[in-house]
Image (cartoon, rainbow, N blue to C red; front, top):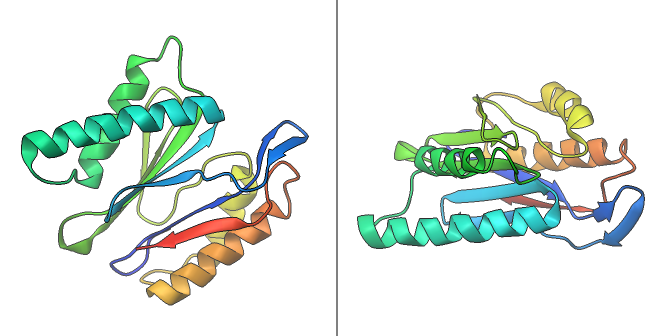
Length: 176
């Protein structure tokens, strides 16, 4: 979810296979650099493999260009990697959130073959996405300050995972 020159990215902590809970402290959100975060929901092994490939490609970019990737460029990289594996896809839905030029927030999500969904307000992915859409639509306001954005995202996440038995066990929220 975006705010005034800021963004927030959040996820629950449950890792499970259908109704069986495997872990209650699973980390789905990764920091690529100070202004760019990646959330990966879906099959945990595919998410870890994709994350490792993306970190490798980002480090190569840093060495070649001597700067960090912009969020738009990173989204295109993720999309290209996912599309490359379209016949045997990674079963995960990435969410990319970052600050671009002049602290303009950028958010984007994709399907498992790299089709981008850009948004100006919020994006959702994962098991509780249906209830997250409703909660985010009802709670979102334009130009929220970081403190208000944190509270809004936290309440939307908690309201959504309470309605979905396959997600939950708390959450992680990052505001940049």
